[in-house]
Length: 604
Image (cartoon, rainbow, N blue to C red; front, side):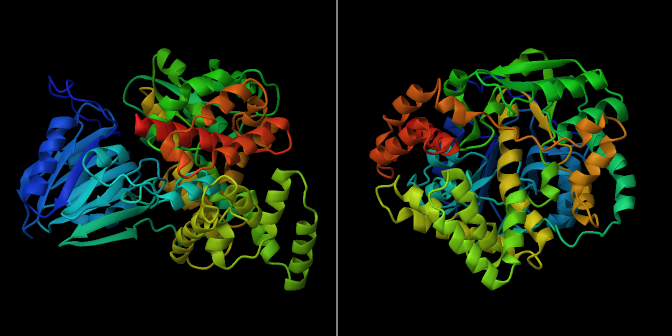
């Protein structure tokens, strides 16, 4: 059952609204703590969760504010002042009090068996211990900043800046974003603000702070393929039942792929519940990225009402500022998902998605580099020399070829999407041409740290790396942010502990294989075994067409803080080459557009 928040007290809406659902402090008592509390009380649309500033048994001061008018926020307070505040959902819990009792009894160990999708702030008054816990799939995000007096935390970066955190930009993190298409935790655009990694928690006790992984991904139970086929149906049904809302109409983001099709099967055939399906359709483009036709085949087969949501090129530009503000930082993937307003207008309250199923398999790009690194040294040298001698191939293909064949050391380096050619291309965008190298080093150090938590460096560990980083920091986070930004609540049945464990543990298979085998019982073979859909906007096509002038205009007027990092001439050259068709840089241009929007909103 999904826990819900309470109604807000009247008269709170006269304060300036910001995105934050929770804000708090743990540190030294005194004027600094009192001023931070006063400022939060006066400026944030939040209610006191822990009275303030209350002195702890260790002599520190602690307080927290929490939104109580949001459906996505649940809280509980014990008589001794211990509390939990969950942004998101704990599907195994009837209410927040159950979660608080479990936390006080078991601590962080409680989460290994708990299906929850959220960011949790927990205070144990007895042990004077604060924990910030992020779900293993990264769907909710939590931030923290160390100050001279203590630790500030919130689920929104701008809240921390408003509360006095140093807003200096982290230029290496900006470069890492351009490489990875997201800010991998602990990075954020700010030097002083860090992000709790997926499946991890920050623990602060007696002045000592540690950030550790709580999600025990491995080892998983080995399951024979035939047995896994028998278990996958009940696992999906149980996941959907846990996440099924208590009330309100339900919608589904139905793409042309098998994952969302199986969610439709699970809801209509396993649970026997009504459902409406929605598919994004890209206007001004006819090609494989449009999924409407394939989605309609599934909807008609299952007898589900189906509606296209048109996404037009100029709408993307119109939505840019609102989507960046809603997400909270620059981003790359998922921009089309912001167009969920029409779903809310149809009276839908909860939206399901097939996001997350790919996390139990090794991405094709990582499988390719893993296979290449398994070749003899002599063969690798010959292939690498041939690839570099082939320059200039079409840029996108050349980058992929050089990335797969580059020299790597260890799982973290092998996972990194960077390459020498990419660094050369990025350096032309910067005033400081060395930034591409320093950003790449920062990114690789983060991947190396994640790899050290895993046993071995085989394909299974690679799949876990993909879930820990790419899938967790993108798919879950932007789906969650954009559903909520449109007044909806997102549900992701494949972000479920039991599905994840079964998919990773299947011998000679993975979760995606299991889904396809199950789909053959309910859907046509052409649907069950259809190739994976890319699920992305046709940005290359649009930027060369209707968006050419709007993109040029927007990136020619970058805010001054952005031009301190980026060379306008370099940016202009990249855009011109893409529009002329000599380069394919559409998604890099999207990254620059969201950066421009973020910088401009900060300066405004």
